[in-house]
Image 1 (tube, rainbow, N blue to C red):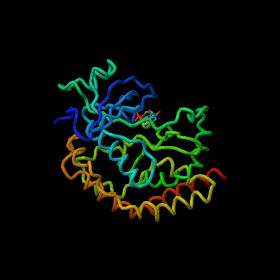
Image 2 (cartoon, helix red, strand yellow):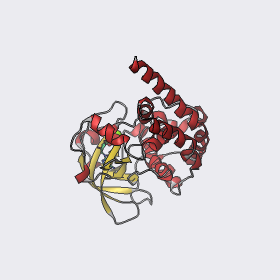
Image 3 (cartoon, rainbow, N blue to C red):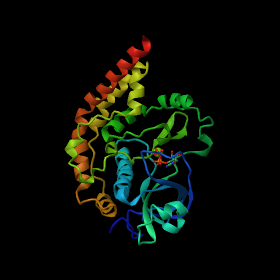
Image 4 (tube, helix red, strand yellow):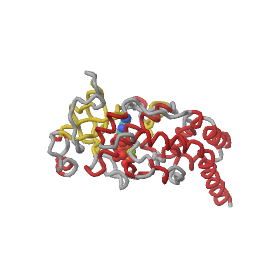
Length: 286
Ligand SMILES: Nc1ncnc2c1ncn2[C@@H]1O[C@H](COP(=O)(O)OP(=O)(O)OP(=O)(O)O)[C@@H](O)[C@H]1O
Ligand SMILES: [Mg+2]
């Protein structure tokens, strides 16, 4: 079906109203973000959500990454706002994206991804000071588990804006666009990614470079027990998601199988971050 969408597919929601969400442009992610009102898949329910659309060449891969990343985070017991493919009428997009992102589309719709607003307005951080947010995040009980989860998923894009603040020391994960190291992996042999280190795992490096020995130990502990004990499974909606995203049938089986094998080397992958952290500490203590 190319990457245009037929609204009404069971796993796909649709956007009712969208306003551009202006944020600092990223070199890593060529997308366009909106905020507005969406209808959830297969339901009459309406929600306030962030909606992303992508250029045609990577669209299927990136929508798939976003949605599958959400399902796998949930399987690992990590907070992630409901995320689903979302049909967006091109007339709702701002002029510039309608002209580029949706230019090739012969359909009146373009496939995007919606993520239900996960922040609580009254809890939004007053100060945007990075140091204050880091201090808050480092006291979030899930932080070490997320560091291990990001290593598992090869998510090299966990900057502070990809953690949504829900309360004091309480966050949700968003933005799974760059799982598997930002590779366009649909056509790759996944064995090539199975043992790759996630050098840009920012939470792992921050914990490893820190002086909180309990936290450092906790990260190693989670690598040994938490993620390894969580056998990932293929979510029910995978077949529909694969079709919608132009992925070959069985793509999710391949992914889940690879990740379940990768779980076994998490202890050594996290140990590698710890060694980098020790080197960092040695340098800064000089
Ligand atoms: N579910 C959500 N709840 C609250 N805010 C959100 C949500 N999804 C997105 N946002 C807001 O929109 C911003 C951009 O979304 P997102 O990170 O998915 O896009 P992005 O362009 O890939 O970002 P970047 O490339 O900078 O990481 C987020 O930093 C956040 O402020
Ligand atoms: Mg982001």
